[in-house]
Amino acid sequence: MSPQPPKKGPSGRPPARTGAKVTTRPSTASVPAQRAPGIDGYFSITQRGSTMAREIRGGVATFFTMAYIVVLNPLILHFAPVPAGGYVPSIPAIAATTALLAGVLTILMGAVGRYPFALAAGLGINGVVAFQLAPAIGYAGAMGVVVLEGLVITLLVLTGVREILFNAIPLALKQAIGVGIGLFLAFIGFVDGGLVHGNASAPPVILGHGGSLATWPHLVFVFCLFLTAILVVRRVRGAIIIGIVASTVLALIIQSIADLGTQGGDKDPNGWVLNKPSGSFNAKPDLSPIGHFSIPSVFHAGVLLGILFVFTLMLADFFDTMGTVVAVGGEAGAMTPDGQLPGLRNVLLVDSVAAAAGGAGGVSSNTTYIESAAGVSEGARTGLASIVTGVLFLFAIFISPLANLVPSEAAAPVLVIVGFLLMTQVRDIDWDDWDIALPAFLGMIVMPFTFSITNGIGAAFIAFAVLKLARGRARDVHPLLWVTAILFVIYFAIVPIRVMLNI
Image 1: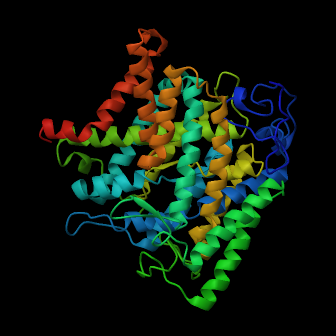
Image 2 (image 1 turned 60 degrees about the vertical axis):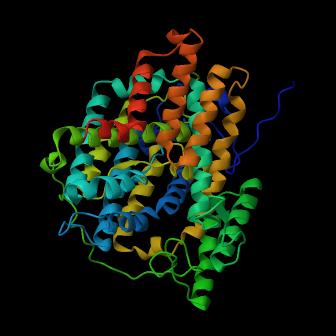
Image 3 (image 1 turned 180 degrees about the vertical axis):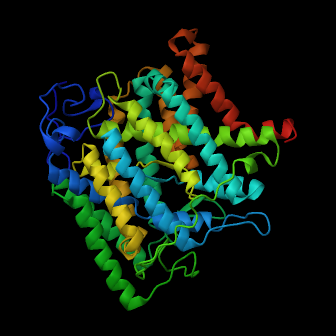
């Protein structure tokens, strides 16, 4: 088969995918270059094939794609069913503190990790905190679990265990993680945009309302999806930002005419899914959740149960980050030919510290966001983009209307487009080698089907180890991967284990 010319990405450059073997342009990770002076030299902007303008544009795109967390995290944590009389921060307090920590930690990632990774309170992890931990040990105890698991992961980074495990994973499984995250992102986009709804009867999910697109927010989503897709295909610079801004303007016009509510708080079935495009200025942010965590409360229900809480949350946090780093790092063309990321330890260290900081700040574990891929799609390749994103989060503390003006329907379609970009690396997996192809397939589909990156990674690791063992090729599996597969078995079976141990 004759080689095909590389396709260009939205920035006019060939798009990169996970691992150098699966990129359409050479990885810049191992290209030696004379250090440039100043900001360019520190972040290796020119060396990585980027420009200041692309980094700024990418940082802005990442912020607007993940700014929803400032609104969504409070809605999850504030309604945690804690024991009677237990402390729970107010929605404005959680929102302000969420923005503060996201800003500080994303800037730290940019300055130390030097990659375009943004951090914020982790979706999925905050659900575990609110609906599994808080009811058992209270809000402060749940945040204590987050602090402990962050400290444990930090120790694993400092001892090199986390990095060794990252590098022990076969390249094909790393590629599968990127593809699975692409599917997962697309599904999140459709759900947060209101085009996919849960259904009480068969089928389990349906299109829009009753199988059709019947509301004004649906129009905003479809408009944003097709406008962004057209701009991306036409290689328009700033395609993602243009799509979000144009769709937000449309949403504001619709809201001014129809005065819609939200499907959650206002119980408006025809309203916006998460937040309506409106907001009020508040120059006095409430940061009271900071410091509301309790380590002793972690073990109020028993030492063993406390350890299991920490272990469960640690696995979720550990592998969500790994999957994100693989996917976004590959998309940025930063992976080496053997699927490794130069300077990985600094990235993992900041992410681990962020987990503990999120608990200490009372807003759940902060973790690296897959939405960082939106900035990479705009051309971001260095930590300067993260600095921009972080500054915007700090700015959002005082002008939260900027985030509230963007309904999920005007941002979620971007996740669908980014999901497509990550999905393209599926062609580079060896589908004739069933030892690796079947685990890769399971990893891809379990992520969106269970709404969890961690579940998909666990399914892939366990399947890989079991199939290699069945084929008499157990030595092909790295010892740490064996340990991880066993830990994932425990992770998936945590409920029957607790029942068996009567805890």
